[in-house]
Length: 458
Ligand code: GDP
Image (cartoon, helix red, strand yellow):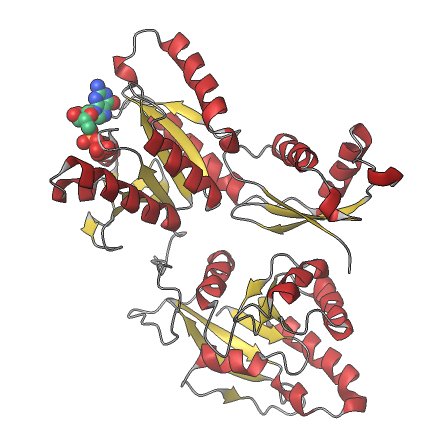
């Protein structure tokens, strides 16, 4: 099955994390001579995900003079055995020279590295967490193995890696043995033979046509798992095969029927929409062509962006429009003016009633999801960064030009990039925007938020 190795220098909390993941299930100590004596192995369960976890615990007893060599040897062995390495640093201490040695080994040897800053409970870990970016291993997960914090984030980070892993173990009766502390995060539902369905929330004002849209999609497609209420407390979701793509649709309209008073209804529908946004990968903001961009629509679209979701704007009831071309032009202009933060998000016109445009909506959702997961190589990024700087150099406050040293993609879902530079505080907002727009256009990433962090070195 899928194997995760926990690596890192002594005392960062690897064993605590190991114990938390493995719980009461006995750790198997493999006594094969000279092979895994210093490695502990156990069966971990996090949410519905089951995997093997290896801990380089033997390090804790290493004597000083032998530490470096043993550490390297053990880590390399763990890396060889693992599909994914979880590299743990201490958020309170920050990045140490020994951590850098590890980062170096992992960059060279491991296909997949997740970075975790442990002991991150409270505020004492914040600076260490930021420092962790400088290791060039992507976005650090903030964990507290001791207190069980960040386990939901760890799960979310492991899911795509487990998805990619063919022989991922699925249990018939998955029940979590590990406390997922953030109760907002919903456990993924697993289907052994297919990729996890794409999680889509359809949000919009009451009467925008959400129910009609979902019914129309259902009417045309094969229902896989039947409508099931209560996956989240007051949203309804459906899993179906939509033109060959397994899709889980969160229908926020279900609440409507329960609310009697119109203004209570408005409130509920916002709260409900907000919740759906948190679960979704792609958010479809459904507008009524007759009354588009109402306050409520803007709020939810803005929230989707802030939550880092891919966004597709769908304009419904298009069958009622007569001057379609003119209307579309106006809509696009309004969109740009009212939702500049969603620049690049696709705008699709549909009729939930007739079914027109649903194929384009499907294509836009799939594309937005793909872009949201996009990974750009460091080589590509740095070639690009060089060109951007040449075309438009950063400012030179006080006569000293800010240097942009290199860029790396820190995360996906949504894509996030770190640019290492001198004086990150002096980069004006307009220059960051220039870089973000450049990333979006040059790497063709419409429909997703793009995050950018400017960081100083060391
Ligand atoms: P919800 O509150 O967002 O779920 O909206 P509903 O799906 O209940 O739709 C509200 C009203 O708009 C209903 O009367 C629908 O028949 C109507 N409606 C929905 N989609 C369309 C459409 O594409 N064209 C037209 N003409 N009417 C629609």
